[in-house]
Image (tube, rainbow, N blue to C red):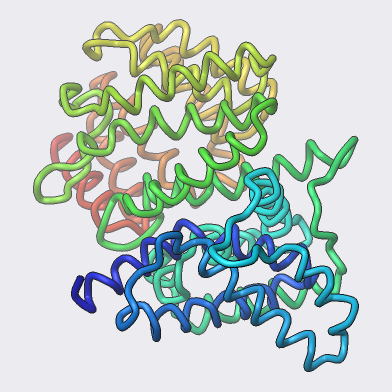
Length: 412
């Protein structure tokens, strides 16, 4: 194996194992920042030793062992050795190490709830989750979100400081605390996915790596919390949406809207996974939960062999349920689209016009985009062109801007 092969292996191992290692160390040292620092020390040791000595048989356990030994050294320096060394020593296997699966799983789950704690801002939760659970480096997160590396570094540092200052417990909440904390975890995972699925800014309409990271986090969460219906609902939603990735852009990277996509390019494996996750969510009682309902909407599209086969009446009904569960102008806008497809553009235009007065929608480019689409279908082309141009001026994504300007030109 060449040195570059070894480095690629180390990178892959780190992506897979870092959350387990940081979680295990956080349980012991009770400090996310210190745990990450110790895990990074182990990574540096691997980068130094593996190119010469070769990749160990169990690289994840090797990293875990080295990290825990770094923890012992650290605690020794802090004169807490006697108490903590005994605690850590019990966890170290004699030679080729291994870790109890349940213990690892519990640690990763605790780490998820810690990184997504509501005491942190949304941006901080996203950055810390990608760092601690996604195994992404600071520069990778910065590139994904089109912000500077120092900005991401500051977010992560402040997040760890905030967690320490707030003395956030390293635990999975229970009782009445579980639902809101789980909602925060799911929100962060879906935010990451959405940024990958429809980038808010930049030259690319999609960032597939972020979708993959979010899917991996969601699948991990589903394995760790198998009885939570909304976890499976979110996984179902992401699997089905991700199945369209290859069909969402042309060869030149230009966006292709849902009804114009080549459905032969949809990934049937991901659709199958998504439908199974949806069925599980519904069996567990998630029929009237936001992510499960959104997944049911996505499933309507996935089950339609052609755009004409789409059950828009069911989709409109599901959006009505979603609007009751999670009322928001964005949900209402999506409901309007479904109503227009089910009953015609006139049925939806009034609802869209009502949303124009919502303060949160004044800078939301999809409102004039949807209004332009409805007006074009009603042959009100001059008004439609103006709406598409307004939408193009509001979006920060270059690909989407091009698409909207193209639609405006078609209305001339």
